[in-house]
Image 1: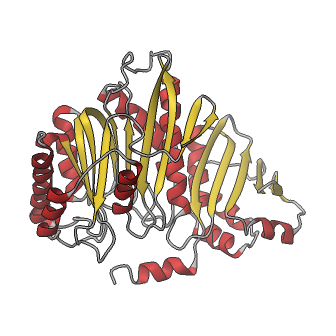
Image 2: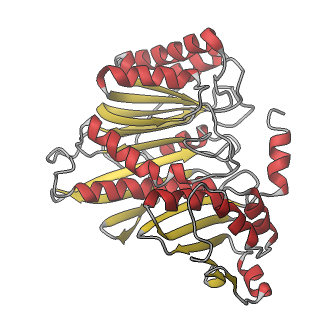
Length: 409
């Protein structure tokens, strides 16, 4: 594993959800998909404090309801079970029974209370789980603490994703090394709050559940909630964080002198995963990052940034390498934020294309060449205040239509 230090946060290249102390994982093919792994479990050696954030869709899937019930009882978790291929969403009372049954099987498998088990599913909406295959997964799953076991889990949660999404870092708390690891999935139906996205974050920090919940919400608001692929929100999305306290230090809270280290580490993992999800949008060829500074507030900056990155016209222009900055202006104009068009600068990469209400001369071929890169940055400066924010997305390609025109087949 390679260490990269950045602003007090030491990134661990090659780190996984099993890099923190006391976690195991596994993934297998239970038969929900034709051949790929489709069933996974994360397990903590001791009950872990937890935090979770869920989709804002009114059609929340059965697994989310079961997980929310589990967490509400003790605010602790010891196992997370996930299946791909079938979302178990909009499946009525039977779907709810199936989610409870899955929870019971995993509790029996690891000899832990049922309320220590979270359940997650991702895949096609409106289909019932084949419970004989789910039982196979629950009874045959093996968990261990090796990197290949982390990869097996990470592969098992993917749907239309083309790559695993992982991030890991370390921070110092009371002079002791605390590790934060994360993995996620998501490729389409991405427009949080939140999207067809699952995120799992493990840490060996000592932190109460209510504090972890607050820290997770802070991190998500500036990461997962700032990505969009297609403007669609799903039924199954959640991000769960577990903290098992295997590194013994004074309990974290906002008054702890090293609190900012932990929050920065959690922010780093969440942002890394969010950007990987945006880059792996269905059919995408480019990651798009929009930075807005000089806004009246951070909230306004985030709204404008997300509006730009979510515009289909902006996304198609980026796919085609067309420096049509008018599409950026168009998106900003109906963001809902009060903007002064005469106090606004826009650049694509380092090249200014619009300033103070006036088009700026630029070499179109140069900007078009820049837009062929794997990452395209759009920078907006407003003259209203100190607010700043970022959002991430991807280009909109022909392949996005192909993938979603035949998703179930």
